[in-house]
Image (tube, rainbow, N blue to C red; front, side, top):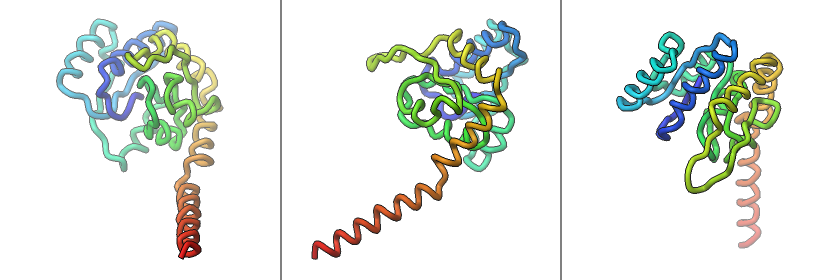
Length: 189
C-alpha cells in the first residue's frame, strides 16, 4: 500500500518500480495506491505499469476519508512510504495503528515515528536541495526484510502506535501543559 497525498513526482513511479523488483525477487505482490492521483499521474502510472508488466497487480483506489482509512489499511500487509524527508507523516502512524509495518526512506521524521521495530528505514543520502529517495532495489530489500518476519513487524507496529501515539497520552500531556500555564499566570498576578 502507498497512501496519502502524492504531490511529489517520484513517489508513485518509485512505488511501481519497487513492486516490480519485489515480484522479480519471487514474491507474489500487489500494490494498492490510495489517495489523490491526478489525471497526469494516472496516465504516467498506466504507461509505467504496462512497461513493467504490472497491469494486473496495481489498483488505484483514489481518495479516501479518514473514517475509511482502517478498512483501506486492512487490505494491505505493508505501507510503502516513498516520500523523501517527510517531516511527520500521519499516514505512517495510521498504518501502524492498523498493524501495518512501514518501509520508508530513513530521512525526515519518519524514523522517529516508526523506529526500527515497526518497519524498515532504508538509508539514503541526505540532500536538502533535491530529493534523493532510496532506489527501487533498496526499497524492495526493505519490503523483503519486513515480509520475511511480517507477524513480528505487524505486532510491533500496532504496539508502537498504541504506546507512543494514543490520543489519551496526547490529551494528558496537553492538559498538564495547560494546567501549568494557568498556574503560572495565577502566580504572576
